[in-house]
Amino acid sequence: MIGFARALRVFAYARPVDQRKSFDTLGVIVREGLGRHLLDGEVFVFVGKTCKRAKVLWWDGTGTVVLAKRLEKGRFAAPWSALKDGALEWTASELSLFLEGSEHVVGRSLSPPAWSPSERRIEFR
Image (tube, rainbow, N blue to C red; front, side):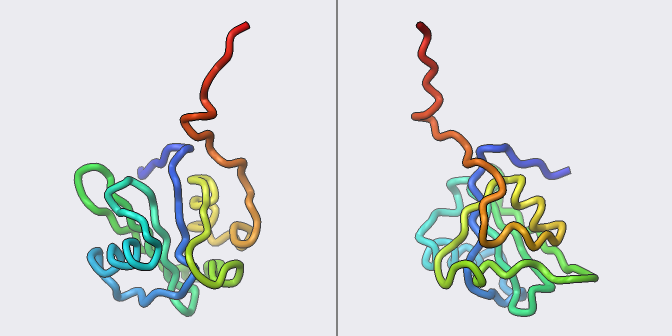
């Protein structure tokens, strides 16, 4: 079972990506296309042009992991339908819905954003 923390940041690349790309080539897209760093522990989602295949890339602390999925029925939602460039930011829950083939992930936020460390201050009165 692959589990993700609620506060994990997930970025769906907003352009179709050739699903033959490898770990290293997807890592270059993360760095140059999104301006992010793979080793920061964020998750990156790439969808093929036909929306039948998707890859998820992340650093788990010991190495780079690629999860590939091909839908036998239906299509993945196209992140580029909601955003022309850059990436959509999702929660781990929205990533799970996306990987199940839900079309409701793209274009609207389904979950409240995770708290940032600065928001976690508890004030006692």
